[in-house]
Length: 255
Image (tube, rainbow, N blue to C red; front, side, top):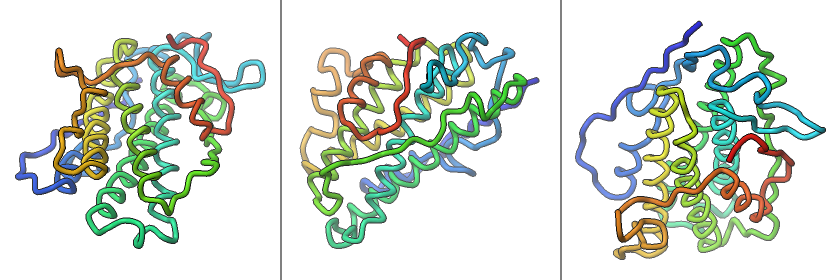
């Protein structure tokens, strides 16, 4: 059984400022970007053997391997980003901490990341369902988060954390692309990483306006002009080190 993924190209438009840059690059439920319309599965289990499906192993949820493992890995990262921005925009001091432009940018990022999270949840559920698998047994549950001493009323702390999460997200998608075998999934990943890169650029510009930091040498190679790419095991180690995710999980089938 095959469910189609509908990918809609973003129409051309004149970009006016950081918010327009984000708005035109956003992934939305209808119109531009990606439309949630199920998930394509060209094989019986979304590119993952039954022995490597996501699910609980030895008391902990394992992200699994193959295409579904990569999708679940991305879903975990998007849960973190969506939760972070949800707390940012709902903080009592949001409007007093950030100026109007910053509020618009952060609100756009919040909307994008929530859509990304829900997209992956629907995509994984669709692939599992079409393969006759138990969605509840193989879908990563909602993760728990704790940001410790992070002060959501402190502009620089929030922007620095946002920068770290967005830079990590770009490197994560770039580093996992080669694992994906389903071309539909690869197209989706390419679309989303382009949005994540715009997020990273916008946040860097808020931190250091009118500078070259939006595409700094620390994330974009001065030799080939490409963003960094890091394997899932490296990214997971970096995310775990942040100590934001409180739900334990493993990734024994991802490189």
